[in-house]
Image (cartoon, rainbow, N blue to C red; front, side, top):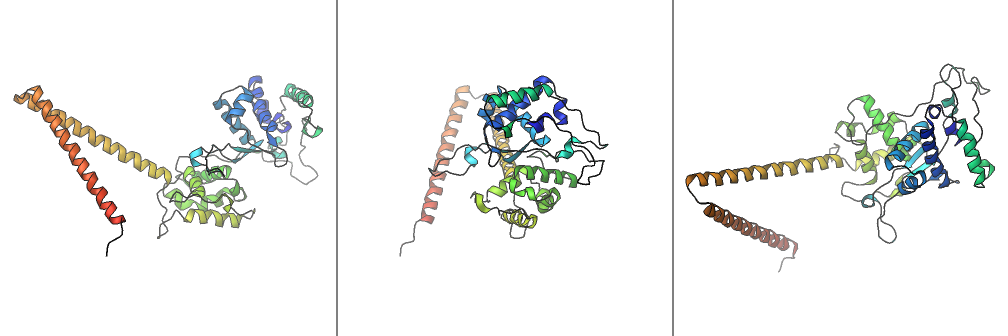
Length: 345
């Protein structure tokens, strides 16, 4: 909490905005495991604790992640994408966040002047609130402490200000090199095992997939699922921080999505786009057939046929078409069953 209250971007917010950000962070802290410093509150708990909407909570979480106060360990998943539990049921998985403090470099600008500290009225309020709950002295909010330039560690007086990594939309294909690096940064944010790799290393490992039209969501899906729909084991990631081992793990998971010639397969987004395109073509063809039947019916009316005759012919044609479809379905069903049954003699 102290890291948030003395952050330079927090100081420029108005009182309502500061109160909302503090409420979200407090909800994460109240539901945190202090051994791992991780928190898994869920959307309902955050909305109820803060009294705001889901959109507001999501916006504040993005701010906290960008400021380095909170990190996203794992994003939440819907039940249909989650692994089955011991009872065979699938449930929604809440996102997991880790509580952290940004680097001290975030408190020093390029010319070595400490930024203006704000939120002093919230510091005293948080101290009172925390002590009233009977927390230990370790969780009390310490007063803001300035980090002087040119400390005893030998750091130069001109420090580079902290900034978050580049982010990239999950369903947008990167085209240029800088866009691929930004997409790789987003992959590192969403996949915790890849944090030991640099964005350029991740971009290099995924380069041919990006060139084939893959997106960030496609890469993350390929890390969890095989092309046949089977799920990769969650324990498959090596328990190490060596970049070369994580690079091998990443390329091994992506290799399942390659053809025998080494070319990337169609991703999930590409398959969905193709399915939607085929559906639209079928709908357009059906619409043209309907217009042609209407034009033919109008031509018959102009030729002198009565409306009753035209309606009767249309009903007879519909019956013939239905019988034809049923015969075709029975034929294909019989042919398939004959292929599956063992041969006699």
